[in-house]
Amino acid sequence: MQPEYRARVSLKNPIHFLALGFGSGLVPFMPGTFGSLAALPLLLLCTQVSIISFIALTLIFSVVGIYLCGKTADDMQVHDHGSIVWDEIAGMFVTFLFIPLSASSLLVGFLLFRLFDILKPWPIGIIDKRLHGGTGIMLDDILAGAMACGCLHMLMLFWPAVLKIF
Image 1 (cartoon, rainbow, N blue to C red):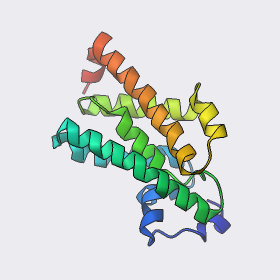
Image 2 (tube, rainbow, N blue to C red; image 1 turned 135 degrees about the vertical axis):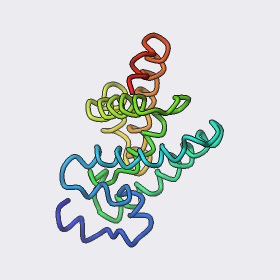
Image 3 (cartoon, helix red, strand yellow; image 1 turned 90 degrees about the vertical axis):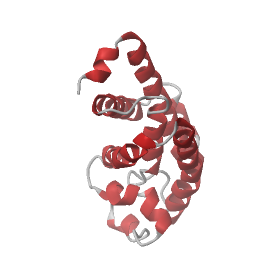
């Protein structure tokens, strides 16, 4: 992160702390990947919650993320700065909707989510370019998560051995 942007955010501010993925977005290279990795411990904590609780958490992370990311982007005076990674955390939760969590599913889901988030296939790329504010920051990652989730469900259906490697 460039110094002028860094001066406008603080990890002591709870909104910035969350939007920056507990600080993971401040890693100077591949902040989106590190933000996605920051979601893994949270996902592991959810292995014992009901599917209804997991859905509720995913919805809360997504809706609250609109405010967190929008406010932090406004404070930084930059739209969707790479260090804002709460959208990756929420996108990772979307990726694992109705997916049994295991080492294999976490690895494959992580890779699929990063693939869709980086490549931004239609309609992700259009949304990323045309929507602004917190909604725009969040929605492209929510869609990347939905696409990764769809792929995981297809793997579970047609090639379940891939998700049982570990």
